[in-house]
Image (cartoon, rainbow, N blue to C red; front, side):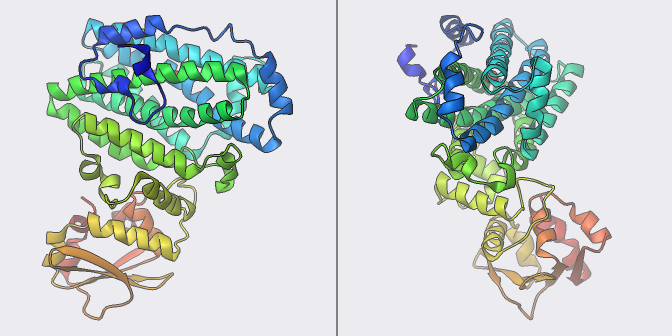
Length: 434
Ligand SMILES: [Fe+2]
Ligand SMILES: [Fe+2]
């Protein structure tokens, strides 16, 4: 392995590629690439922060770096149970180095936030100052990381639980969120030629993260080979967290200038994150567009950029991205929702109804879905011969579709009413929700 093969920050990192990469090689890579966060000189950064960045850019940087600061603190803290549960010596050695890395990353962001961005007076108050910038999605993902590592702490011998933790920690938090975030930071500090101390640090952080993700893929691959339960558990975890990850980079008031002031778009960062995850999952023999619920509804003909644009339609409509928002369904969001449902619907069950399904929306025009020649088609408008009619608001149905709301609860509270034969009504859970 040469350093040329270790260019970080691509969605498809060569470090991860080799099944052949051994824990020993990853350890050696760590030794060769040690660096000092304490020795970085931030003098020029302080001047740049005041004089070269606009107020908008400082706000955007604070919002973004706050998540890294809090994230690094959390991953340093939650890796101990992962280390304790490692089944072999080689994994333990690498995980020990990773704990050191994450602590160093925290020191780096902590110094920058306090010394350059004037946030807080000491480690705790700097962390506290970052709290107000954390997004809903960030809080959900990291609450899940706390939950799962706490469970692992109690049951260190539970290998499927180890697999779930690695699936969340290395593949999602590091691979899908941190590395894409760092990629765009690296791009703009380089392009604008600003913040040299920060740039030095983030380049090193990013190389470390690539190594961590490479380890995660290898480790998870080993666990998958040990048992199918480990593979199932990882997929279950991805199913659980995907809705939350879509909210991590949602800026205050959905304001796109948080990215655009640094010359990238929010759609770009989501496309990068999705591509990064899909590439890694496939390397593990998982077909994300078949096996992960939220992704299985996507039109696989589309590019990552198109998926990201569509996801942003749903984020802006309030369907995903922040559960505190009530969806406001417009035509474009409804089209995407029904497009996904035509792929998510169980065709056998739908056909067995013997007629179309009608959504008699209480707040917008009706939609219906029919199965013909082995595929489902959804269109706006009413049909007369519906076998099953759902009387519901489009907002409530959107929440049910993305697993934000429980359909049984909606039925109980009469927010969802079904019309049709007893048999047709009984089929609803099997139609969309398996
Ligand atoms: Fe880190
Ligand atoms: Fe890491």
